[in-house]
Length: 116
Image 1 (cartoon, helix red, strand yellow):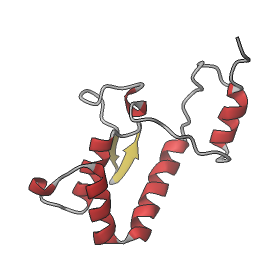
Image 2: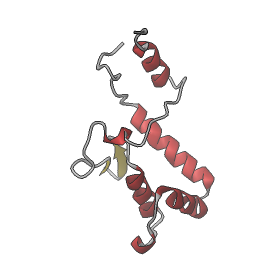
Image 3: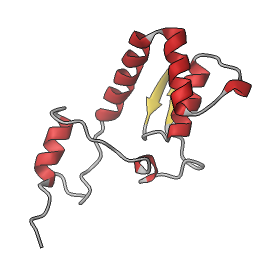
């Protein structure tokens, strides 16, 4: 059996922005049931993110932000392309970075549950 992963080192690298983790499709479902708990809520006129969205949730969010008719909603790639076409790539990147920073303010505990 090999050495255990260096969770404290990984945690520090993620929190400081030294690395960007790649999360699989099931990551947003780790700590919540999307049918019960929303990934974001409106509070005082701002979107407050509390969980990672699923691909479908993020697609719907981008479609809502562009006021796309519901009959035109589609999968995430299509909605991201439409959002970029309507608002420009700079605005899309700015929104995604802002939303990621909001989420990063409350980093989750490492997988083993211990803080370094």
